Structure formats: structure tokens, C-alpha cells
Amino acid sequence: MATLTQLHELEDHLDALIISYLSLFDSYQALQSDVSKHLSTGFISLAQANFSAPNRIRYGRDHYDQRMTGLRGVEITTANSKPTFTIIDLPSADTTNGETAAEDAKPPTGQSGLRNRKAKATTAAPTSTSTSTDASVNASDKPAEKDAQALEDEKEQEKEEDVVPHVNRKDPIRWFGILTPSSLKDAQREFVATLPHFAAVCSLLREIERQEEEVRRVRAEVRKMRDELGVVAELPGDDAE
Image (cartoon, rainbow, N blue to C red):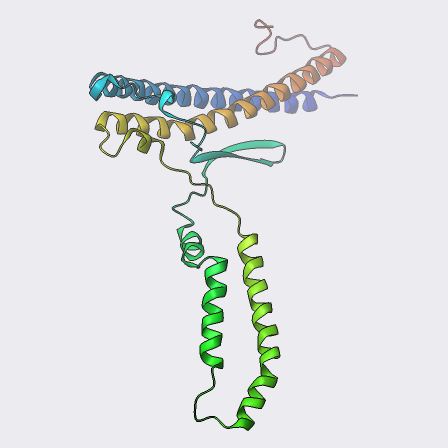
């Protein structure tokens, strides 16, 4: 049977949960305010860019096509049944230029084989001063050299086939030209600054829902324990329910 001490401990736990819940809700409202501020400033800057655009070009999705890819993504991690949303930068062609440049620097397969054959013919050509004995030795070594060269060519071709093509993700603002208005850049900066706030809002919403369920569960336990002990009292939030 429950005791008054256990009831008081459970009530203290309920109070702590409610305080934590209200603190999370306050943080949620502050983040929503930041999101609204960034979005408002971004759309105002976008309207200024459209107003001063040459030839009455409207900056927006009408200038995009299916080649446009995102520069950022969302990473969701779960720890102790608590999901966390994080904005991450996706790998772009600029960050993999080292590998791309190395692949571009390689000659095509046909040219590589042609150059190898030329180099082989040059190195294998006998000089006018070579003796007949050296010529016979070179002739016996040629099949082995050909086999080794063929193996190298096959390995080179397999490497080129295994290369995964990199997605060329360009900055979306480049679709409007090089000399873009400063107001358009301001709009992009504000919209990008909103993304971490969106991720934090999603994480907080999941935590708020989890704590709300916990508050309801503990409140039901407190009511049950009070009924067992014959204690009559009003719990916080009973009026709202």
C-alpha cells in the first residue's frame, strides 16, 4: 500500500516534470520567434530583389530545373528514444575537386593504351648497335612484357569503371547569373540562417510530446495513489482537462 511519503515524492516528481515541460515550451516559442524574424527579413529582401530586377525577372523556382540539387540535408539521430534533428552540409563538387580533378587529368582509355603502346614500342625498339644475342633475348621477354602491360591496362580500366560520378551541386543563387543583387544574397542568407532554427524546433516538438505523455502518466499515478490514501486535492492542470 502506498504511503504519504511516496505520494509526496511522486508529487515532487510531477512538479519537476511540469517545470521542465514549461521551460521547453518557452524555448519553443523563442525559436519560433527567431524563425519568423528570419523568414520575414528574407521575404522582404526577396521582394526588394524582384522589384529592382532587370527585365522584370522574378527570382524564384521558375528559374530552376531538375538539375538543381540541395546543398544541405537533415540528419536524424536517436539517443535514449530522443530524436535530434541536425542540419548538415551535403558533399558538393567543390569539396571533392581533388578526386574529380585527378579523374579528369587521366587520359581516356583509348589514348592511354595508345600512349602505352608508343612508349612500349620506343623502349622495345632495338638499337643499330645491338647484337643478335640481345635481339633474341628481347624477343623472348616480349610476351611477358605484353602480359604485364595487359594486366595494368585491365586494372586501370576497372578503376575508371568503379569511379562513382559526383553530383554537381551548385549554389542556387548562381542560377540567376554572376552579378546578382545584394538584396537577393541577403534573402538567401536569411533563409539559410533559418534552417538550424527549424531543426531545433522539430527536436523540441518531439521532446515536448514525450514529456507531455510523461506528465499525463505521472499525474494518473498521483490520482490513483491519492484515491488509495483518501487524500482529496486538486492537481495542476486539472482545470484545463
